[in-house]
Image 1 (cartoon, rainbow, N blue to C red):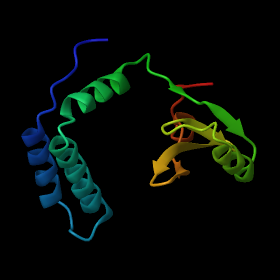
Image 2: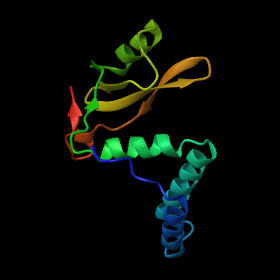
Image 3: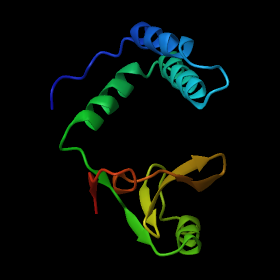
Image 4: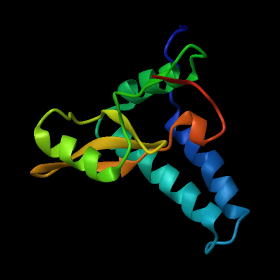
Length: 127
């Protein structure tokens, strides 16, 4: 893997701003650009730009694979496993062919939709 890229926040925000200027404020695209800008500002505010740059580089690596930790036929079985105490924050699982991420909320773990590469038309997951 090559060196971790520098994330130039001002450059990214300028590009997002220019794209926002070209779209209707009520559009789905405008809202996506706005969300992306706030995500980047949030990462910067938390002092996590270096961590993000490393994550970004890992995702750009053609050898990167998403590891699916568990496979469940039904949501009920996945929810039971979640409550069993074996699940950990950040685990990627599959339920009936669809990707989910285990996420820690205050006082509990929950499942968040997180499509797998094969659902998005790419196939860089690792079973």
